[in-house]
Image (tube, rainbow, N blue to C red):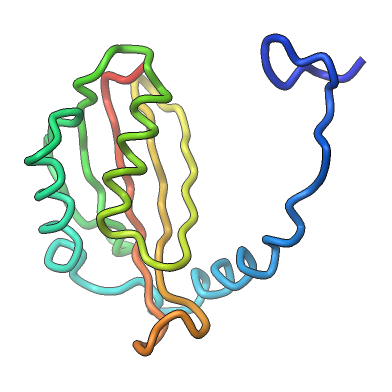
Length: 146
């Protein structure tokens, strides 16, 4: 028997594949690996939008923000919602991300020591913009959601 995909899964398998999304995913992946694709000064370009959302929504407390050596914008957050509400924290993280997300976005949620981390690459690729292709790496390091 195949592994269950959720508590009451009786099928053990899906109904199709997502291959039609592959070209767009590969386009973003190719952009992400280009030298100098990550834009400079995310604290100037992204922070005002993220902070404005945080000021008007009380689901996260901003504990700190910094740019790491690779240019990623790291936000240290505390989840003010119900402990264990991973779905709520994920929904809020996606809403926060929506303030700065560009036309192509990758998000990966990971669990760490007493935290949930959302790793994001978002940017303009291909013919999405009249600007040169560029992107951002953003990390939401969320405490209190587990």
